[in-house]
Length: 498
Image 1 (cartoon, rainbow, N blue to C red):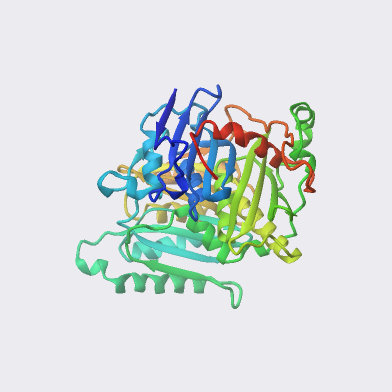
Image 2 (image 1 turned 45 degrees about the vertical axis):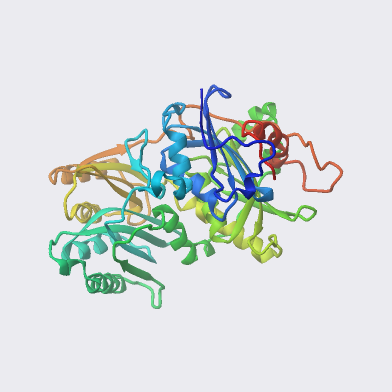
């Protein structure tokens, strides 16, 4: 079945000139047996690609393959998706939700933002979960054991409750976005001076724990506001601005054979791929005839990889004109044809190094190292502070943390290592489970299956060049697949003029 939202275009109608630019959304369950095709065509306004990828990610969907083209003022995207357990999408309200989320003035009567319940039971809107009634505490500091415990204890002491939030670590740096409500009922609790006081106290705690003289840090407490930046998008911005990408060796170039590999060759190479998936590799070339920089990436396949990559390119002010993404076994393969917003490509070696490092950092910030635990408890003030204090008392540090609220229950996901960066021993986790159980907190250790997605594996079809053969360009790559598919893809969108 196909669910369609948005206008069909007549042959003499130029959608680029449509003053509304309403996107067309097609949910196609007929073309593929193993996944749903989500097809979106829209005016190519600034940031719309990131919005699309962000929205599909917030819907708890797995994007297994992507084709993107946006030359000529019009964006045309095809996403191969399933839900988290490998099922096709069957909710008939999904196309309208996607369309209303992408274009606010398409909502009936310019009403409130649409809401949608995902396969995991999460209720999301265009920017993710609604946190407009919460104050926000953001920070980027030097990472150290007990950091989150110290910060959340300040919030508890000031009569605040962490309703939800996330914290990431990478290259010795830590960034967090915590959404905070006050436990006081009086109007003074919402006065701006209160948030300024909390910001000063958090700064003082961070400063007292600094081990390096002159270590850079940033702390900001802001009052509740509508239209906050998406949480994970904001974390990428914070870590990029903190220059976490500057540390470590230069990225390794990709193996070009993975970008021109047929099914038979891919099968033969699967054993070799397993040795490569732990390392994120990047190569950047210029296609001067077309005025593109071509970015090729390989890494371990995992959820939200496409979102993280597009965030990095957006933070660096690069525009994606064409892209393909897929996987060969556990190896994710991405290729982007980009230009800077000012029209240039990636011109210098120093710029290539910076772009490569930023892309690797964006992928590694969400690396799933350490012991993964999931906790749940009745939501209450001080819950996060109590849990992180127990971790600190047992010599554990956080690599990554996410806390969210579902009705009256708080649910958290944490990746743990020892204070020295080693693996947490099972007996230590059992001791923590016993301690937090006395506080009414349930803790489960999650053993993740290798590779992603766990239900099936997808492969990148063999590439075959179909146009531009008389022009000199970089060696045959995944990008040639894009050109050969664009004509077939466009037939399913109605009439689009570029």
